[in-house]
Image (cartoon, rainbow, N blue to C red; front, side):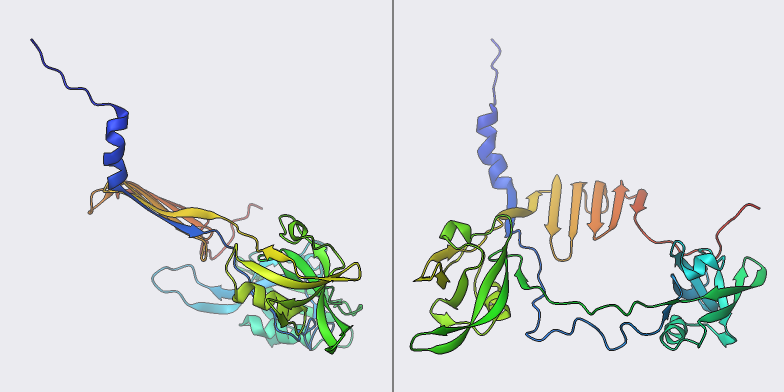
Length: 319
């Protein structure tokens, strides 16, 4: 008589659970908090001219002896812009502009910031082994009306936009308040009864200094999902609703099953990696993603990378 042993999937689950480890993290976007006073226009904005192209240093394509060659290389040409109308193409090397040697990108920036009287420029350009002269009329930069601030935005904690206003409060006099001017998708404000045009005076009993102060405190002093109490004036009534801040949830940042598979990821910077059958010296398959660059490796022998820039000396063209 033969004896047989049977294993069910359910009997293996506790064993697999003991082998697998994982780490969850909060899926929270990054945010840069602005200062109270923001300069929307730089001192040089609206002055100078535009050549309608992007350039970079003219580096050799040798991987063993990288050096900077004379001129600057054209990396992009704006359609119907001054450079395009002058006949310049991507890959051209600009050697001189109006007699000024252009061996660095800063030289072009200086020339654009200090235009000549008629905005006319003569360029000495190399294309392959041909050096030619091109005439270009630069475009004057726009001198339209300066940008106007609309509101301060909190894209994470309250998912709303606010402006600063001064209001009169009995026994406190004139104080700053944050008026709700925009409410975005998944904002926790409507669930707390706070609508557009409401005035927020205080946060957990502390009065505000400005709309930016509200944004700063919501994103610096509290965690996603925390409950805060706001002092609000809405429809001529003073209320103190409790608001549960937006909670983006959690995601798995790391999964490990011994040497069988490994997975790790992070949000800032955007990075992830996956390894299948890691035998220390080599893996059956591994994948790495770092921002826009991706790499696939098979058995440590075959490696394929994508979205990686190339160093090229010339662009091949057929006449």
